[in-house]
Length: 347
Image 1 (spheres, rainbow, N blue to C red):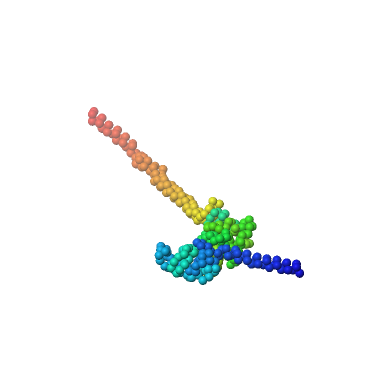
Image 2 (cartoon, rainbow, N blue to C red; image 1 turned 90 degrees about the vertical axis):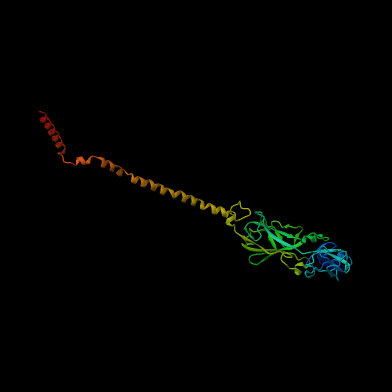
């Protein structure tokens, strides 16, 4: 009987430990001290320390004299142990809120209300490039960059990290809750611990595993639901980041050159300028020779040997040769007759 009683006590203590430990952890991130930052949408906040016994919150527009004017906005706090920063009450009234000892008199700073901001980018660590809304060659490794002002929650006592969940939806619609790196290490995407901004996850996504990460477009976003803030204020860029994409595919020809670093389009002008250059050079070099060759041929034809001998043929004393053969002898006889006549006249 004693042993059974001891076992029962052990089970009860263990159960209480498991039940209350998570509550303690959640309580730390929901407990707000005076001067801490709270975000629009947060629910169930324990602001008792921030209120210091007061039950009214007051807000003054920027530049207003707090000590000599009434607040521009007041909100009653019936239960400071569980208070919600409703968007309808605080979205347009961000900044410092004061606790009031009367409806018009400030009694010190309660907390600072801030509109949440959350953004996510995808980086290819293989080539050190931002590939948000772009593509990556299969076999590269990826990491995420988270930018957010939610890290101001770290002001709260005992809060060391802000849990932000990264969502990755595969081409077939499957929602991934973990990623495996090229080395085989698995990293959970649920409540990823964020401690700074920007926050880098490291190279947690190895795209080379075709069985796990088939080619196609992946949708990626981040969200924070600390103290149900996303449930109450589900707006892109605030409690949930804008959804971005990355196309996982085989090696693109444009970056087949290992020298490619960031801009896949830089090789296009090189290909374009290289092709026309030989074509233009060939056209210019080939066209003139026919013209140059034809000109000498025309000149040679005009001054051919046949044409040159024509004047020589015309100068030859062809005409005398064609006269009668007795023409020369007649001249001789005529000369002799003239001489004889001259001789007879003299004697």
